[in-house]
Length: 327
Image 1 (tube, one colour):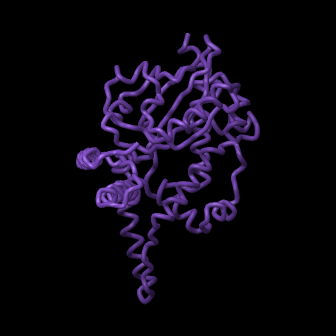
Image 2 (cartoon, helix red, strand yellow; image 1 turned 45 degrees about the vertical axis):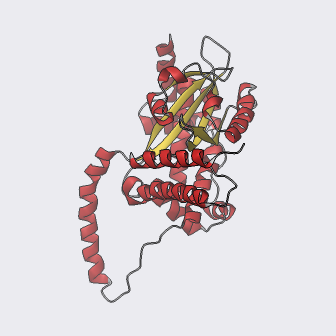
Image 3 (cartoon, helix red, strand yellow; image 1 turned 90 degrees about the vertical axis):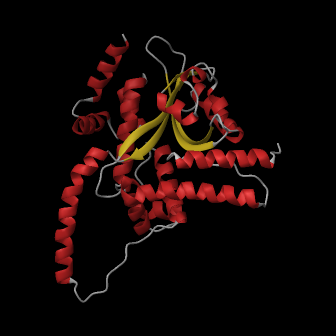
């Protein structure tokens, strides 16, 4: 379908307004046209991507501060693909009212290529060929701006109905500001002390500049994250082999994960396993043994001990509390 220059200019203006208001998750659709408007669109998309990456690098995600997984958008979809529930933030991002979301087909908020991808996954989930997955989807706002996001999808059913439903969660990684502020004073004191020691011991040695990740390095690290999220039950790979799979080296893999996500590769995987297990305990009827296996724990006893150590309560207690809440 062809699009006029007037419509493309309208999209560019809308993109600029969103960026001016601080929203950098929108993207302009690409067209097979070698003209100035296409050059502007590419530049704006790259700028938004770079600003997001800069936010990660300059404090939103670093090795001295913790990461919290914030739910940016969430939906519950029935067997017909209709939205039964959505959070308010999803409505804000999509620039629509809650009344325009509830009862609307989820697929209507996706751009055409993502609609095809979504339908294939939705069929597999509804038919119980798989119970969960993650995929990249491009959401479409009311003004036809694109929002590329990684969606985590889980099939579940309630105690009173065996008809499957889908839980779709869009996660945004960010720091908790209060924790960041609290730890800042400590980190500054440590930095001053370390700098003083460093000056005393390396006075005559050349200073090493901080390694900077290229856009391609960041793409590979993000690909690694997506692979881990899609294979939570798989054995943790050797870092050397995992780096080779991504087309990078072990040093950049470890350094990149620290820079982008504020943690090690192994700890990131364990955080996601616990997060997914906690969600499944609350919103699915899978047995605890099955949940342990799906999330990469070798036995139910190991899972229970690890879960209690992390959250302060056993998985069985959370399951019981969730079921009592539904009654």
